[in-house]
Length: 110
Image (cartoon, rainbow, N blue to C red; front, side, top):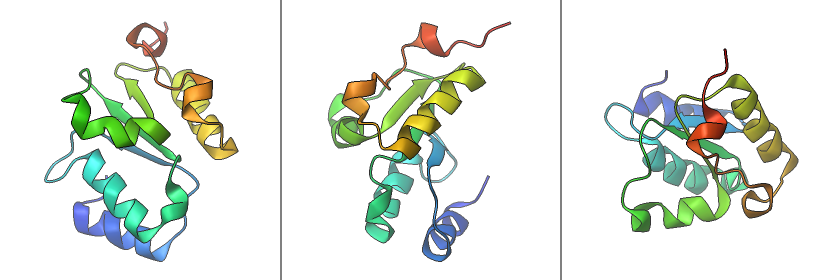
């Protein structure tokens, strides 16, 4: 896990195909990272996968994120995560792919 300062530095120095982040992180959350990333690298729009252990907080705070990005609830299977990453890399529109995984879809499988 990269600390906030290191996350921003990494975004400045390197290109990323997809960014996988958690909604709740120390200091700043995944939404903060998403906003910073789009300032530094606008081409990352549509290439974020946000993981959370609880349902979404206040809908207004996430509305812009949810228009273009992907969201999955924990626990999630690797299959679900890789599907989300694959869709983001292929540029599949979030709304067309049903990328907002329901909790039962992302549950870990035995």
